[in-house]
Structures are given as C-alpha cells and as structure tokens.
Image 1 (cartoon, helix red, strand yellow):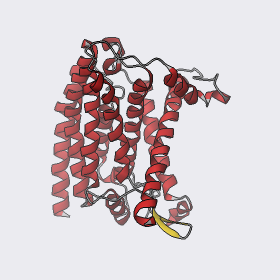
Image 2: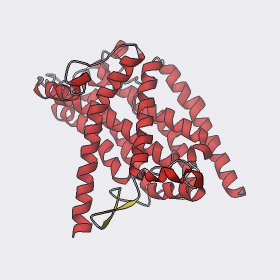
Image 3: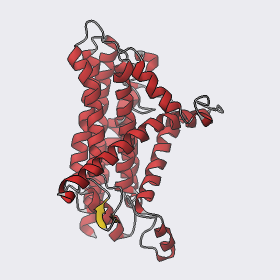
Image 4: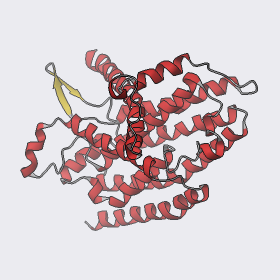
Length: 339
C-alpha cells in the first residue's frame, strides 16, 4: 500500500509544489537578471533586496478584478489557461531528478514513474499546451488575440518538427525511449550526449525557445504589434495561469535538455576516476544545477537578442533547422550502423 499509493502521491505533491514555487521565483530572477544586464537594480522594495516581490505579485493578482469580455465565449475563455498549464505540470511525471536513494531505510526513486516510452509521452503531452493559447485567442472575440493564436499554432508546427527529429537522433544514440534509460546510457558510454550530438543539442535549445514562446521567438505576445497577444483580454488569476504555464514550460525544456544532453543527475565525466571526488555532491543537486544553467540562458537570451520578424522565424524553422535535424538523424543512423 505504501509503495504503490502513498510514496507516488508524496512524490507528486513534492514535485508540483517545487515547480510552482520555482516558477514564482523565476519571475523575480528574470527581472533581476534583465535589470543587471541593463545596469539597473530590479525589484528592491518588497523584502530584503526585493526577495518577497513574488509574494506581492501573487497577492496583487489574487485581488485584482477578473474580467470576462461581454462577447467572449465564457467557458472556453476560462478553460484556456488551464489547458496551457496542466500539460506543463504533468510532464514532470517522467522526468528523473536523481537515482534511487534510501530514505528512512526505504529505497525511493527520485522520479514519479519510469515509462518505457517516456520521451514519447513528453512530446505528446507538451504539445497540447499550445491549444490553450489558441483557445484563448479564439474565445476572446478580439482580433489581436486571434492573430496571436494563429501565430502560436504556426510556430509550434514549424519548430515541433525540428525538435522531434532531434529526439529521434537521441533515441538512435541511446537505444531507448525511457528518460531513466537515456541517463543510464550516458553513464554506460561515459560521455554526455551534448558532446555526441552537439547539433541536436543546439537545435533542441533553439526549438525550445520557440515552443515556449520566449524571446527572440515571442511572436504570440509581441506587445508592439498585438498589444499583448493571446492574453490581451485576460486579467487577475487567469492571466497569472498563463505566466505559470510559460515559466513551467521553461523548466520542462531545461529539465528535458539536462536529461537528454547533460547526463541528468550524473556528475561531469562520470567515468573519469580523477573526478570521483565530485560524487560527494548528490545526483539531484547536479540535476538542479544543470537545469538552473539552462534557465539562466533563457533569461540571458531574452535580455540580449531582439525579437525576430515573423518571416524570419518561419524561414529559420523550415529552411534551416528542419533540414539540419533531418541530416543529423541520417548521420546518427549511419554512424550507429557502422559502429
């Protein structure tokens, strides 16, 4: 009973709370990083050095008036934020945060479940989130959100193809769809797949930026053109749910990239005996550190690069990334057969 029900429920509770708290403070981190980039201080007034700003933001959004436009489709308008958020959260069910550990004398795996098709599950579930943006654009009964929804759908299709092809390259290298199995394959081969598949690593990162609607690919928001994009008509907690979904998706992309390309919970160069002293750091801490580096790069890119034009975004996806991803799959398969 404990192993079959209680422990999985506790894992789900811990993961969901950790992700939601992490998302809350990611907003503060982003504001601080962009401020430092621009030689500013960022939020400083709520708590020491502004560390309580996320609490103030949550309180503000909870008490802010939540308006539904008179001619909007009320049910779909309310449902859309949840459609965007829920897939980003349930993806974490198959992401391994660490190996098996002993807690109070009981062996516990640091992941909710290990599906033998875990990578396929992530691709399938994560793709549903864009429907939240599309539904929000359509249900708002406003031209700017509708245009943003159309942009989001076209953008997802363009970059999902390239990202999925890179994942095929990873399957060829690891020989499994299990996320735990992919980490174990990197441990057995003694090298992170970022060094084995550098092109796939680059394509996955760029595609991750585009699929999470992050700069320089934030076309579904594009304040200068669409006055706020798909969430123009949203306010209060429903507006906050879209932000939760965006930052949760950032954590998803960073976690998946860490697992696929940076060895997951493995220390750097796991088979190098001279670096054995790094094993003193628990695996889950290595995982969190690598994921944080990815998240920081997300923020760094936003503070550095200007937004693409829409034709540039489409050209990059269809004429550059997809051909490169297909070529990478072919080369990976040939190398796998020959070796």
